[in-house]
Amino acid sequence: MTKKYPTLNPDKYMEGWDNLYKKQVEGQLDKLSPHFVHYAPLEFSFFTHDQDVTGKKALDLATGDGIDACYLAQLGYHVTAIDILQSAVELTKKRAKALKIEEKMDILCETIENLVLEPESYDVILAIQCLQYLYDNALSKLYELLDSVKQGGFFLFGGNVKPHFRTEPPIRFITMTEIKQALKGWKIFSIAKEVRLVSPKDRRGYIWVVAQKPEKQ
Image 1: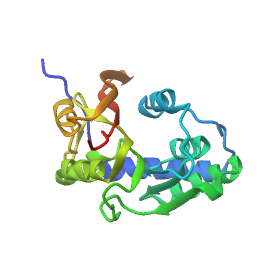
Image 2 (image 1 turned 180 degrees about the vertical axis):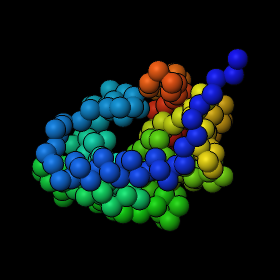
Image 3 (image 1 turned 45 degrees about the horizontal axis):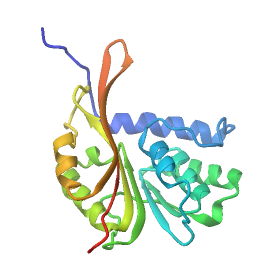
């Protein structure tokens, strides 16, 4: 018997996040210190904890509540954090101010599509749960981001794969095969897939990766 999943418009999904962030902007920040919903940023910290990151730059796409972006700033990176939701931008600024790391962050209301990316311009790029919402442009944007990582820099990726509830229009999953092909020649520190039971009627697949761009020989 085929499992039936509900259909959700991604715009409604974003509306839910917007409402949540607005409440957090108006209320108290329950958690200032980093916590991780996704594995990639946490595992990244293990691989880089002894590195000198003075003068290095990081980019956090679709920053959301700003926790990952603020964590990178606490590690010492100068972080550019973007999100399409103004509420997410305000929440990230509030978190950065509370952590006293405002000077280490540029927090912008911007779309991923409109972001100008120069080749080899960031030491770390974080793309968690966002590229899939670019639909047909998801895979091309992935390669653009990889081109923007400096030699020796890191790319942290997380996204959904099947099983997943249906969306209209359908979101574009980047598969494990595609991410491995895109990162061919990179040093892979961590790559994995799992299925989480989000609720009794909602099973979702996730993949994540932490990879380092090779130095040119």
